[in-house]
Image (cartoon, rainbow, N blue to C red; front, side, top):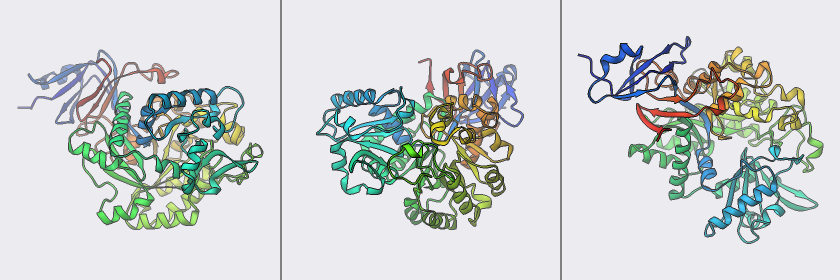
Length: 521
């Protein structure tokens, strides 16, 4: 006699997102695993007295979204501290930070996250300055982190507080005085000093994961450096209190410790696993630190003395040492590379690693990838881990137009060209913002044909593509018998609302057959 299901989801439009994207009416789950898909009548025999039955009333059901590039600590800090992502001016940022300072007077630092001067009203192209943040407080250190995390802005008190940790080469000056703008290594030094302690880390991760499941995210590949996040994730998993699956991609400065304790790629349990070794080559377009073959279109207006083609965040020789060591230990490697010169250097290193054929090394972002790069990436079996939400900056007259000019702007994030080259494509958000349906919206409605995907292709990149990037395609990423019951129920069909996918609400998020978010509550 067939055992009853624990959960039956019925009266639904269940998209498996397999190669044929077979659509079913119902799915049955037992012990967190999908045991049957089919018509509602066909699955009725699996209903027992203790079976939970979820009538979706015709709603769309998809595999749970897997975000292949997150910074969950920073996302949580957005939610706990001042969220500057909606600010439309420097004045608005100052107001939000002042409100935060007043609301939390006992905290040592006043922190704000996610500002983006390229989206502000007017023609401003420069980050927040020391003088502006001094209006928030002249006594307490005030720190505002730009959306890309490659630039932070500091008031005078913060410059003084962090002075011993800030490399002068990555501080910006005007007329011999610091502007309060710090990039790359200096920005990272500030972020490391602001890493949450144990109790605050639990608070910010809990806030981040609650936000993730609200958006249908059932798994993340979290980029972690110098924090307590891995420990907190494992403690929560041991207590059966971790609502999502977490793959931890460790910064390269953790490599020796990982080797010492035997935490290899894919080591771990059902909810928490060790992922890749993470490193950088360059920075970002917004901070003019992504490394380009040709100068930035607006380099002459930068005024800070930088190399007009961007900079190396990790010198190529140092990056070669990291990739050699990590690959010799059998690790998957993921490297942040945005500009075309950075992608060339990164690809050349990853191609030569001894475990390249099986490691599924990843290039994170790969924004200005060339056709030649794509052919080589496909041949080497490297994964393109890309962020479709970055198309937010690719409008005519937008940030990418300003930094790169029209021709190069149209060559950024060519998602269709990636698929045409048979490169494995995984989508993530970089938490800018974390929102898979927003990312799908940008991918489906991108500006050029080479950048644009179909709805099905975009959804697959956020499910099966991300699962493949994390060696999880046998248990996650599609809805099939034998796979884990990680799924999301949407209030409307993205195929029917392809121009407004970002407005679709999540009705329920399910992990291992258990509801972790219910939009009806």
